[in-house]
Image (cartoon, rainbow, N blue to C red; front, side):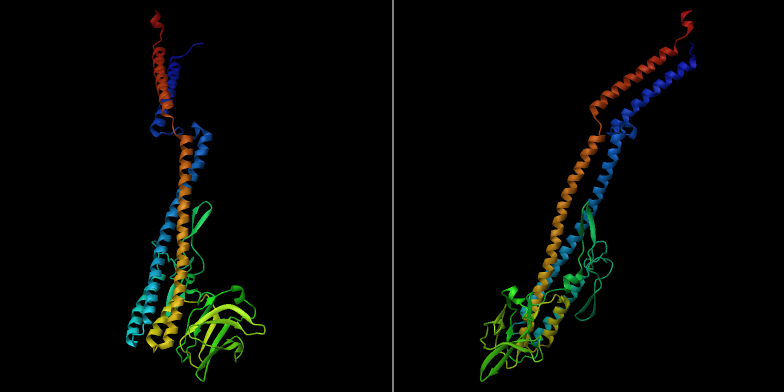
Length: 416
């Protein structure tokens, strides 16, 4: 069979091109540090690389989400800290207002200062995060949560939800709280019952918050949880009776009359028969007047911290002092204590979420490391092997070139 000169040239060129292509492929591998440049290099490994790369990208997005959640929660925690400090200042002012040395003018000055703190609290309740979303509007971050329709009457316009951010494949973190739960759903009294003086009292009796001794007894079916302590002064002797205000009018007598001693415990219950102990007690000090009464009602979660501060302002502006001021301040202080405890509860929840984010971030870092290791195993180049292959391909190319020169030089004229 005869082989044409053009066929010899084409075969030689094709051989050199193939060796050049292989050499360039190895050079590209070395320059990129990657064993797989195209799926054809290793189809199975290339498919696995794509899968791991997608998981790695998703993990990076979770890390970005987690950072955003951390920023929002850190800001909320800071705002809640400021709110706690403000409420403590208001309570200190309430304690200061009880100083008998203060006159009406002094208390009015305190009220003016409290009005500024009230507006400051309203501003904190309407705080936003770095992206303009309100911290305490629930799910509706774009809606201003609180607005004042009248002094002390603050309306909540948010909802009950929480904005959630996905920070891991299986975890969403709440980055907001419903303001109504922070500022307006606060327990009254001691959390079980609220003890208050009736505004029309004329004596100097002051009631304290009271103590729950036995929850089971307090929840006895015979306890309406709407009780009253009514005083009678006859012949210089002061006695009191325990009434059921849920009955009547007139209210039903449950116990008494009993002898009164200022500051002594008043156990709530009935005289029977048979006698029933409601598992709670209150303490009243001072000298109640004839007909003075005090109420003990089951606590509700409807105290509004804005209304509480406004009530304190009005009390300082209008109260003539004496027992009415003392009872009013005691009630306000209890409500402020409950408000601070409620804020502390939300702040603790925020701190717990921040701590959980640390754990989520740590797990995300571990996943990122695992993904990087897997990708390195799949596609990173073995430089020692690549260097050897590069040398081999260079030799192959040189051999192809020399062979082409030899073959291209063949001619019958060389043998004549």
